[in-house]
Amino acid sequence: MTFAEPGDYEFIVERNVEIPMRDGTILRADIWRPKTEGKHPVLIERTPYDKTSSSESGQGAGEYYASHGYVTVVQDVRGRFASDGDFYPFRDDGDGERQDGYDTVEWAAEQSWSNGNIGTIGGSYSGATQYRMIGAQPPHLKAQFVRQSSSDYHREWVYRSGAYEAGFNTKWTITHTTSNARKYAAPGAEDEAQARMENAFENYLDWVEKSPIAPFEPTAGLHTWFNDWMERPDYSAYWDEFSIVRTYDKVQIPVHHIGSWYDCFLRGTITNYEGMRDNAPTAEISAAQRLTIGPWVHNPTPADMREAGAVDFGESAPLGWMETRRRWFDHWLKGIDNGVESDKPVKVFTMGENQWHEFDQWPPLEVEYTPFYFNDSRTGSVSSINDGGLGVSKPENAANPDSYESDPHNPIRSFGGGHLGEDFGPQDQRGYEDRVLTYTTDVLDEAVRVTGPVKAMLHASSSAVDTDWVVRVTDVHPDGTSMLICDGILRARYRNSFEQPEFLTPGEVYEFEVDLWATSHLFKPGHRIRVAVASSSFPRWDRNWQTGKNNAFESEGVVATNRVYKDAERPSHILLPLLK
Image (cartoon, rainbow, N blue to C red; front, side, top):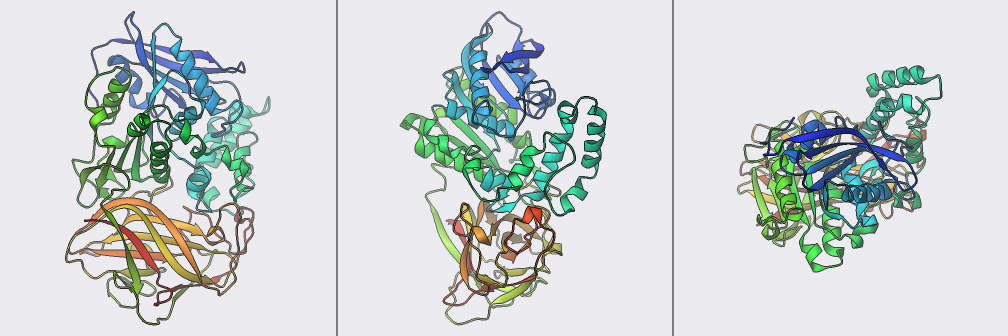
């Protein structure tokens, strides 16, 4: 149901309306439309999550938008639930999401209840189906509002900077294999397939913990994509098919990209906005791109949230999900002059301050990228391996490296962050800092405002041929709470290229750039900034067995001694975008 106020129109609902694709496959949709004889603009969601309970229909979008004079079409994608065909996630080429999206838009434009102005809605996978349409350029597609979706499914979702997103993807695969187990079972084996997958779903955490990860064998059919992913940890032509980046120059419409600071698709939201803004074929289309990022987690109605993880972000955090999107489409599909075109293109929520800010571009022009260097001072603020210091002064002298053992058989557990596993969002890291390196500032005399992309530059070595570098930034409160702000990972073999991995020479010092994506956060006076460094965060990311092999098919590894350097010649640091 929706919490937004309904409009003036009564409406009718049609179930399982057949929509033919160009290859003859029938996809089915539920349709909400105003109970009038007139023609109306149309909003479409294409979902693999069951049109009867999707992120749109399950939240009352059909009823809400129909009551405000829109036809709402929620369609099961190819091979899912009521729709025919075979499902392979995110497939684009051939008879995949791009062409099916085109055919659905153009079918809607031809219906008697349509005025030919088509918009699209939805997020996550339903955001991906929207972005896919851009490459096909359906003539009647006039605007999109995309929630929390990706630009590069290799780098941002299946493998984040080379590390497999284990908790999220294992659960996602089991969930969606379970929901279609009967559909893909051999004749006569439907009950057995369903029971097997329900058992796997109930014991999801066991599947996350097990090794080797692959092959995935609980049932036949739907899981084939998972094994394909596991066999291809390096970026290759296979992954090109799932990339939105290659279609940026084809954007012909205004797109509102909405994301969350604690979302697994944060980088994708930002990258898609920047890519379409910078590569749009006309200045008008470039100027019509919008970016909104809030303090939320991955959620079907993020703009209605004020709490995420362990933090309440206050009464200003919610924007009103249904109303925000309706204002966008009222302008682009109905031609209402409501100020959308004059809005600043970027709107982000600054955590800590708990206020919204608008900018002319992303990253903000006013940002100064400032290194905060690791040092040998002791803060007494944390029980970590080293309790190191963090400051803006570059090291001038020699210093001993900080070292620790990375044991893939006993990985450091993950807690919080932008993912879809357990305990996501901002979480207190105090119980997870005793086995990591930490670097913490003195107590801040003045507020430090960070808004923009964040990265860590580590000068480091390992005794193994491969390892992971996990870096997180936390806000340390006066009571000791160490609240997670942003984090990132880099699998060392991919330090120079995701296509051509290069193994380490044991003991040799390299410079590693770890992408923590982005944030907007105000560190208050009396607080501290902390950077933590480790080599595992499991089960969010898979174990790196540190042998140089394909980790998905391994169950034994080596213990590595990893070192982080912080001297004058090798000044490890975090690069923070300070907004004065």
